[in-house]
Length: 418
Ligand code: PLP
Image 1: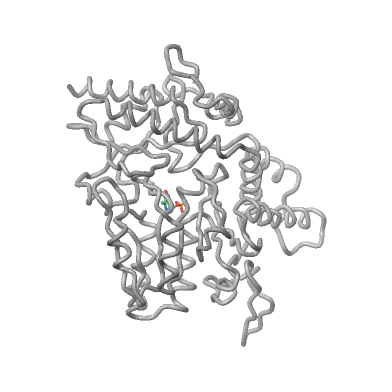
Image 2 (image 1 turned 180 degrees about the horizontal axis):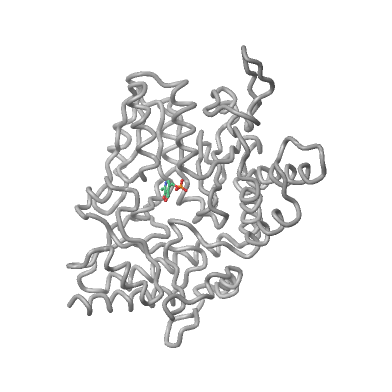
């Protein structure tokens, strides 16, 4: 952003956010005659040019269906597609690239665990422990499983700032807990959950632990071997890759023991009318023609991210979040929803006397894109007693200047409603 009068000072000397922004073509455009201020990265992040270039290259030069062709194009597409697992293995420091099952996002990853692992290894009365700040994607699949096989869904409470209440969480853990499934970062509140402690506590009672990393993966590097969770689901499209991509990582021995959840081509070794032998992981979980070009482009996003200085990016995002939070808190009549001790990337707020949708619509007139609504976290909204919030969410390309633009646009909303 280079709007005159705005605070464009880079937060960190070793991180040039303006240079990074130039990698994202869409950030240079205007909306309603104003520079785009994109503050909806929690819903889906913008894509760097290398991702767009990868899509073009695949479709123009290297496209064919994967896994079945003996010809060059198919072999090349297969190699490019399978290479992405290696990239993910390195990026997340996993043990084995076969531990990554491609999905269309976090939702599909969690549903896969519920329907495959859950149906095979849980029984009536077993408990799945989640928290009060989960996205619908980490609630509904367990309710469906509850209705199918009679598991019990247990919810650990959060406090008024949006922190998980640790003592209450610990008390809910018992020998009946077979799975702990929690967000790494809350999409509605920005709370960073203590996932390392959660993994330890879950394992201590013999439970498996699933991390919903939809919002965590884009904001922090996670070392899967060090974390030692059992499942980790993320969305490629929130990680600067294309829509329709993501992956479920699971420990190999768990994935090996799990039955397939969808049947069809590509997930078999042999089929007769009497019987089918399933393929090994990960193919066992990837029935049908996959999202070839988009997965390959997710690999381009991973390459891009791998080359960035993550410590500096995390510090930059923390700086922009702290700066934006201080500006928002200075606006009379604005209530921040979610003031947890550890936060990443999200500022949810309500304005006295103004519906969140009106906030979103009016901000858009100033080129400021925020999300308004319940953010697929209705129980969170209910807990805070609001029908919804306006939510400004950050990406690594967000700037202090954009926080200035956001605050100025919010003050305009207040003038309109004064
Ligand atoms: N979990 C969290 C915390 C999210 O924020 C989201 C999406 O916003 C999801 C799960 C679902 O991700 P997707 O829609 O990419 O499947």
